[in-house]
Amino acid sequence: MVQLMNADVAIDQMTHYIEEVDYAGYDPYDALNSPLLRCVSAKSKWMRIAFTQFLRRCPLNFRSVLGIKKGHNPKGLGLFLWGYAKLYAITKRHQCLEAIERLLELLEELRCAGYSGNCWGYNFDWQSGTYFRPRTVPTVVNTAFIGHALLDCHRLTGSTRALDLALSTEEFILRDLNRTAGDGAFCFSYTPVDQGIVHNANVLGASLLIRLRRYVADARLQEAAMTSLTYTMCCQHDDGAWYYADRKRQRWIDSFHTGFVLMALRYFLNEGVAQQYRQAYEEGIQYYVSHFFLTDGTPKYYSDRTYPIDIHSPAVAVAFLSKLGHRHRALTDRVLAWMLRHMWDPRGYFYFRKHRYYTNKISYLRWSQAWAFHALTEYQFQQQQEQGEDADEITAKRD
Image (cartoon, rainbow, N blue to C red):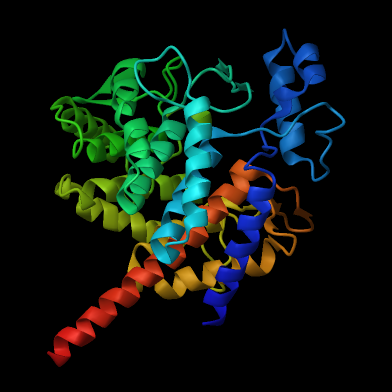
């Protein structure tokens, strides 16, 4: 009960914090929003990477000095929308509907133009080791998470506006993303401008397609979703894990991207398809719970070491494990308690990263607050669902 009360208090304080800033803030990767850094690095991808990594790792926030303004990040808005939809289902408060309308308005404004369907990117340019992606370029990860949030918003609140925004995302995924073929399957690209094989991105896009088939009479959806899922399932290791990506220097295994793959796979199973992968799903869960958490609930970033502890690790764990119900309730509660004890700031937000000897306490709206808000509201929502089921079971036994 104490832990649930703490989660309640955190949600209330977070709600005040994020509404006060109108869901806008800084991001760990927004260095190229600085006019100065953008000018200096205009001809060098390595300088763009260096500036981005420096600001991401630095525990001091120099963004205002560098001219970086707080902004609305579409993925963050989608996660906040998800949280408010669940809060409305729990509380039926009109204020939740007001927040939902504001978030839907912002998501409509921030759609990427020039693509086959609704899609979203980031509010900053970003440079990887192989590709430069302007803010105008959408990603399948952003679009998938936002799409799932929109579908759940429609399911929990009845919002037709949310459903309308979600429906055309299928055309973006099916028509605009590149595909890499292999062994009778294919992998969706991360964006329309690359060919990268990133497993969580691939199956997140596929999982949105499998849910959209309930609303769209299009035979392409299940066929593409299953073919895409098959690609990543064929890449699962014998111990249940997946590499982050296919390229040699991206073959690491981390907690929250593993969680994303499992989240996506669960959507398939919940839709009554891909049952041939249920055992693989269970093996993935077993790897996840046995490799990424210490006995006291401390969440690990990587499977082979603890630090740094990124807020994504406990937040994704709470969001994912909450839906497993009583199975892993003890672990879920330990991780949530650890997150509230070590990453929470009484001013109403969560810290970015905890290192062995110091903590990066910068508040990042998309990376930290949006994921934590989604996790805490998921925890509460699942608690309510389980209490209702328990009450129904007790009533049935009495009858």
